[in-house]
Image 1 (cartoon, rainbow, N blue to C red):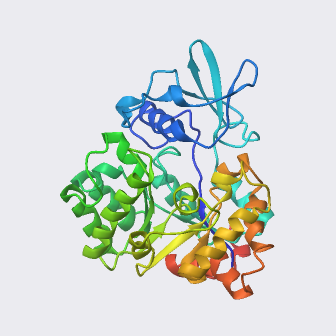
Image 2 (image 1 turned 90 degrees about the horizontal axis):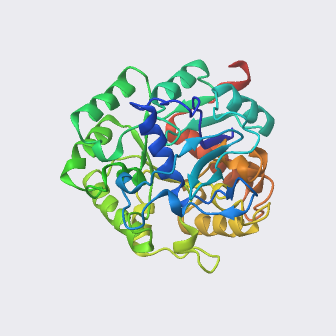
Image 3 (image 1 turned 120 degrees about the vertical axis):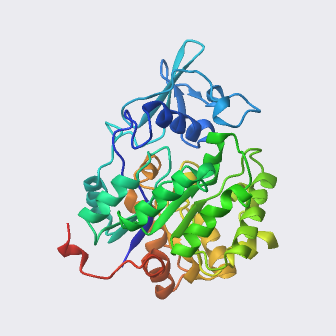
Length: 371
């Protein structure tokens, strides 16, 4: 059984996409691409550009987002205007003529690549996708499992806790996506282990809700900033040892693999060794524009993760449909499935689906009879 632990469906980005207003959604999107690895161009002549104009350096909250007529374009592009010049960020694949990804698109991709099931994550830039993820899971229960969305910095407030309970009790969602970088929406108000966050950690731990957490190095965007979040989260885990944790995205190469091999500080390894915890193998979304398929650099890092943590802690993900700006969906799977000769057949089975299926309780019914 092959399970993609990192996929997305979303309604057209021109709208609010589950957020209170279109403006809130647009600010999420602008914030997401302030430091993106997606290529950026000047529309007039296709010259390469950057996204520095999207924010004011030194102000890492939403208050620092610049007024550049940020907007949703077509063909996978997000657009903005700076100094009278229009620019485009190729955030989604060029073939995405409109910025929408219904469940049926993911189903077609999965059929083509040979993927049995996918986990639908819920980053704010995609929209507050609690309702849509739940809809997709109800419509295609043998093919899709959805996570719920939360306003991260406010997660411990009564309104957010009520939404978590509703998503769990009414919509049937069993996991929650939490992006540390989205603390920027409220100006990075407190660390992860602050008293304001404790009701959230307590609620999801007591209710057995899986935490899918994506770390950030903000607001400083350096190794010290990343480790500060890790240290705070380590203190959360000490208080809530039963918390089930899914770490989204692979460990940052720039911080921990400058020489091409992973070297983790002990404080980080203590978090990685938390039981129960799984860690994503999802390299093409960040390095597919730098490394060439079949990504031998990523394969070396997978070997390191296997040796240091064990294959049973690793789960494969793609970040579809975003990853297709760099490679095909099938290639985002095949660099592990067809290559990585150092992995045994059993280790590949674990990484490519068995561990994720067990972690989220995904059944092994005949998926070809569903949907």
